[in-house]
Length: 147
Image 1 (cartoon, one colour):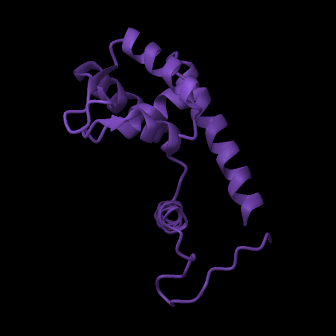
Image 2 (cartoon, helix red, strand yellow; image 1 turned 180 degrees about the horizontal axis):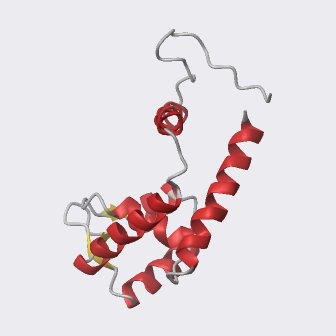
């Protein structure tokens, strides 16, 4: 299973990367924009963790996005030691535009792929919470061995 997931992630990242390269954006930058699209503002440490980026790499990436007027930073009003990142109005429009481009390119994906994406999101949530992965419908443990 791990091998298939890794291969799928690499192929998908390569395909999405080709679309984004024509727009002058990296996959990592796009993923950060997508994370920030919920409008909540996210602490830099959370963005680094969610996107699997070292803090220094994230800082440079956010600096670039700030320079492009796609992202801005604000001190967290609840904890003044933390900095939160947000999309600018331009960043929101750009994220929506890029998302549409990526979705159009990935139009070959089927409803089964959408269902798989939902199942993978649920698996990520369970693994992140420390719970054992289970088949929600049957309550049985998911087989995680490579096929």
